Length: 286
Image (cartoon, rainbow, N blue to C red; front, side, top):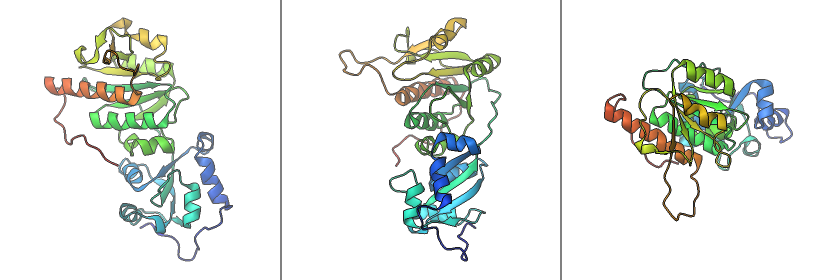
C-alpha cells in the first residue's frame, strides 16, 4: 500500500532539492539525462501499472486526491513522499492535479512482429504533444499494432503526451527511432505504405486499406518529407481527405486526419472479417 511515512513530515519548502529535480524532469533533457519518465494522474498511472511500468518514486498530496487517485494510491506497493498542496502544485504539469505523480524508468519497447492485417502508424516530426497523444489514443482505440515516432519532435513518453493519450502510450508498442530504422523495419515486415497527403490521387475511403499497412503522417505545416511521399513507388498508396469546396480550411488537424484514416482501416477490416468485433464504442470523455 502506498502511504507517506508517518515519521517524515510532508515537503513544504518550494526550494526543496527533490522539488527542483521534479521540475527539471518536466524538460526532455532532464528526463533523458536520468533515463526516466514522469507519470502524473491516477488514470495514466493505472494504465502504466497495467502495462508493467513500475514507478521507482511516488509523490502524493492527499489533500488533492480525487476518489480515483485515492484508490490508486492505496494499491501502489511503494512508500510515497508526501508533498504539501503548494509543493505538489509546483511540480505538477496540470491546472487541476489529482495529487499523484510518479517517476519511472523509461520503457524499453521492442518492435513487434506484425500480423497479416496489422496497421503501424508512423509519425514524422510531429512537435505538438497534444497531437501525438491524441493519435496514440486513437491508435489504441482503433486496434493499431504499433506507433513509430521519428525525428526530434514531441517526446512520445513526455508528460504532456502521456496526459493527452490518457495512458494509451502504455497500451501498445510506441517506439522512437530514426528514419533509416523505420524504413528497414517496415520493409522487413512487408508493410504497404499509405502516405496521407493533400495532393494524393485517392480519397482515403476509396483506397484498399486492408493487409499489413504503415500509415504515414507528417506535420501540418510541412507534410511528409519527399522520401516518405515517394515510398509508395514500390506498391504503396497515397491518400487524401477531401475538403468541402469553398471551405476556409485548407487542411485538417493531423490527429483528426489520423482518426479518420485509422477508423476507415478498422471498418474495412471488419467488413472483410480480418478484425474482431469492437469491444467498446467511441464517446466523449474528460
